[in-house]
Length: 464
Image 1 (cartoon, rainbow, N blue to C red):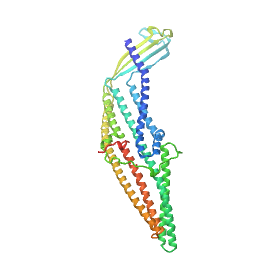
Image 2: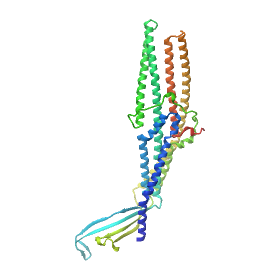
Image 3: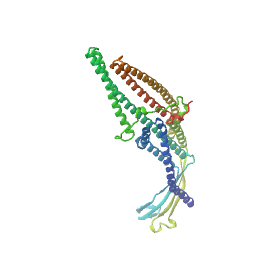
Image 4: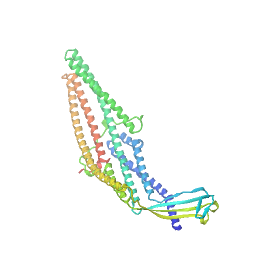
């Protein structure tokens, strides 16, 4: 028995000392893999397709500085420690429970006719205590598998954070580029409208028009100035938002000119529904079903008995001088069965709860598939619409440019007034404003589709 117990303790101590070293090596490999995963989540190759090096640099800076991404990474580390805790529960437990104390007994202790006189003595106990729950039913292993599935869910949450944040940042960045250009056009519109209002007033002073025409042009001028003020406000707000993403409230936000932005061409307009399998929410729902399935199995195994091997090996003496004598050795071992005869229906309630959660997880999984397909279809439809609108705006701008050139030519030969030229110029600027908005909306719709397919490069997706 003593030999068996010694072997058990040596096994437990060996496990205790060597497991952390192995875990340390595994941790290093995991950190490298996690770093590689996060670089893939960032998907810089996709953002390079917009031919904007400033945006690509911002994505790298976002990866390094954004607090939400750091929080998501820490949650993954927390999940790994939860797996480690669960794995530790599968291993033997070894503890040292020393005891050093003085016992003082009075003379009222009696064994039959034998009375023990008053005495006082020291007691020294230095045992190693080992225990190990025999996982006959595999319950502890299943618990670890359940926690591992929870970790996979957390990893997909981190991936979803990368997709959402990079998409939101890029959309905000493009909106800022749009606002810059719109503000530039709006300045020209305000100047043109001011000139129109001045020339209209001169016509009125010369008796060539009514006061109503003057008031109408001045009213329109105030409207254009209001639009100008709103654009300036939007420019400030968007700049502040980008600074928060980059965790620097004093950072100067550089951006590309709107004319230099390139729209990705030949994007897929018909996407297979199987692409939903790449979405983080789909993978999360799938892993959650597996996790709850493990939880159901754990709840069932709670009805079965448990068996714990326990033992102690150490020294027990009443004098220091005899502490290391052979008869001072302490050893005991045994198997402790455990079975709950009555728990007030708690275990059955937990089992039913897990079953309900499993059924709920199945419905959530099916709903996730439906909503994922809907989001992809909606994003594809939005992309088609914005593409058509952008092309129509381009065509309308060409027509307005031609009208403006013709009116300027008529003015040169004396067939049109300066005021008519200004009207055409203003109309051309308004159309240009619409064209810029349509272009950026088209760009942002490509980001929406990228997000809908789960952060996957759209050029790697096959058309159905």
